[in-house]
Image (cartoon, rainbow, N blue to C red; front, side):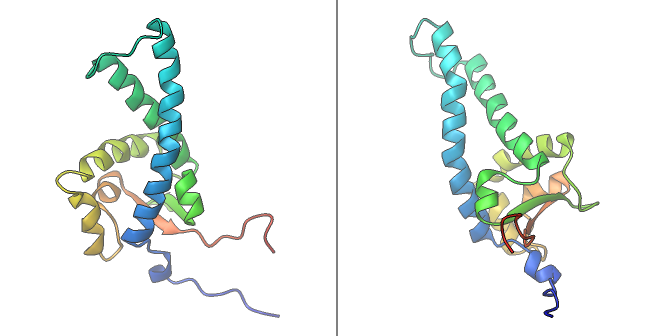
Length: 152
């Protein structure tokens, strides 16, 4: 009988490159979410284009983006994170992140892209591989080694 593999803290850390890979997948999913969120607004606008920099439309799209990301983060992973076997946890408890943590993470992640993605590059120097928005929201990304129900 084989003993289960020992998983160390270092094995659980998510590299910047895996993080960016998951983000790339999630950007593609997010395009779909934003497209669907825009349909009723354009329909209510008589099929006409929405004026650039429309505050209400921008707010609506941000809420739609947070709806997708916040819900996914509360469940532990987005589609991109699932593909890259990454899970989001509460740094203090190891459990699921709260809605408050996901809201802070959402805003802080947007700010992490400024300037030149510094909030993400910070993960290269952090011993836990935590980006700025991980630290601010008290969340962490970890590798998800749990077997899926269909795997044996």
